[in-house]
Structure formats: C-alpha cells, structure tokens
Length: 435
Image (cartoon, rainbow, N blue to C red):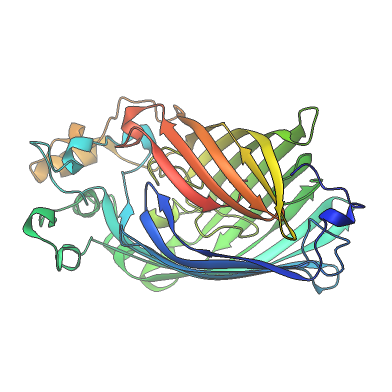
C-alpha cells in the first residue's frame, strides 16, 4: 500500500480491528513455533489512522527447541490524556538458550562439537544453557515540546539460569536422538570461574529508567520519513547473594527513515549503543538490550533475530556494544480484501555489531584454570583476536501487512564470518519490522 493520506477516508479504519493468527513460525535459534497470537487495534473515528489509539497484543506459543513465550502487551495513546502508556508482562522459558562465550571473536565456536555426525561430536546442547525470564514493565511518555518527549519507566526482570537438564530433554527420545550426558560450555565457564555460582540462582532485578526522545516519523509501524532517536539511563538493583550486581547503563539509539523519491521505497537505518557506566551485571544480563518501550518479546543484545540476523543468538556477550542495521524497504504490491488494506514489501539488509566494553577475562588465570581440567584454552579462546572487530551479516526479507500495523515478517540472513554461526543461513518468521 502506498502512503495513506489523512483525507483518504476510503483507506482509513475506524473502531476496533484485529488480526488473529496461529502462532506458527520459524526462528533459526528457537526452532518451529506453534501457538496463537492476536493484535487488537482501536482507531476511534479514524482521524489518526494509520496510528491507533489502543493496541492489545496477546501471544502464547512453544517451539520445537523447548522454548516458550507467554505475553500480554498493552499500548495506548489515549488512556491518559497527554501520555503514551505502555505495559508488558511476559514469561519466556527456554530449556536450551544460546551461549557462545564472552567477547565475540575472542570466543572460539567449534561447530563440529555440535554436529552428531562429526568424529569429535560432544553434544547438540554444548553451546546452550537453561534460561528463563519473567518480565513486567510499565513505561510512560509525555511531551516536552513538539517532537521532543520525556520518558520514564519501571519494571522487574526475574532471571533463572542453570545447566541444561539433559535427563528432561532425553525423556521419551529414542537412543539415537538422546543427548550425551556431558558438560556444556556453561558448565565449563562455571568450573573455570568465569561465571560465579551465585549467577545460577534465581535473581529478581527491579529497574527504573528515564530519558528523552525525538520522534518525527510520519507513522510508527512502517515510517517512510522522519527520525526516531532516544537517550536514556537504566538503574538496575539486585539483592541477597546477587547484590553486587547493581548497575547503571547508558543507551542511545538513532533511527532514520528516508523516502527515495516515493513513499514505497524507503532507506532505513538504526545505530545503537549500550554502555555500562557503573557497577556490573550477571552474565545473562550482559546479553539483554535495554529499551524505553517494549515492542517485541525478545531484546537480546548482539546476535539473532532482534539484532544481528543470520548470526547465532547471543554470539557477542560483553559489557558494552554498538549495533547498526540498514535496510532498503520496497513496497511491491497493494490490494484490498473486503474492508482490509494489504501491502507486500521486501527489504534487503545488512547488520553489523561490535564489542565496545569487553568482559574482563584474565588470560593467564584462564589458561591455568582450563589446563587444570585437562582442556586446551585455545579450543575455547582466541586471545590474539581483535575483540573490537565488527561482526557482519546480511540478507533479505518479505513483509505482508494488513491495515499498516499488523505486519507478518520473514527474514533470510547469512553471517559473513563462519565462526558467527553453525549454519550457512538462518530464517526468522516474526511480526513487524526490526526497527
């Protein structure tokens, strides 16, 4: 669909509309997904279309790689006069969550260890650990002047991390499909002291954040012009055995959308930085990307469908990082079915990310610790690598949108470095544009 004119009533929507889909999708990191989702929109008298007044999003699913998502999200521009209010509650359990080590290129990934046809096979779960996250958050946005807004929010993140439960995953499996009972990389990091034993205990981390944003986009779901930028700080508290993991982080995001002569061809790019200003975080929070307003379920930092498409999820874990995404968004067809307006688009893209603040790893101590367990440090660490070298990937996507806001997305991507994924390419089926 081409850009919608505010005066084109034939293309506007009023009242309540919704999209209901079976949550059947695929993510290279998560596997095949089955469940259901719906997004309900309220447009009032249609004068703000394509912007909605209220959005309610519900999703429940499981995947073949033993992950799950149970989520309720509410987003409103009309609930409280003068405020944009968002609230989210999500639970995301995963039996096998990706873990490749710390500092990106410094962490060696041996794909033969996860290939059950290899002579040096260890386990398909070798680069995995048990991880679940319960998250609840509320965010507010108000007007400073014209396009400038203030933002504030609070929430709680409850993490649980531990070793992969081999017995549970092997239950009901044939002998040729069972996972071997062996230590995974997560267990080895525990043995070598790179992960503290207290990080395997359930941790509740209440947080508050605040900042400012600038938004001149012509619409939010798929803008064809404008800038969306923000800068904010997040203070995260911790208690009990985890009390040393209080931290203060700084985030800055810049997103630019430019129509290339016509609204159906748009160049869009995003630049993002996350830095630790004070304190420290447990390893599983180093891979969490702070945002001012939750739009998606998953916000991993570097690697995977929400950051570096084509690269293994959480491939780059560090105390601070930079991220860049660039896309050419082309609307190639539009049509109506009944009273609903549809368009089809494609989006070739390139993604890049890099470490800015490496996790502190003492090479000499690590070599001693690894040798004490009969292993070779060089099988796990490349201390000669440039930790600041960017990780790159690229690909192309297909989008099918209904009424501008309900957007089904399929992205195919490949890493430019073989060490960034155990696959030549990855496919993600999601909702909405990445940014």
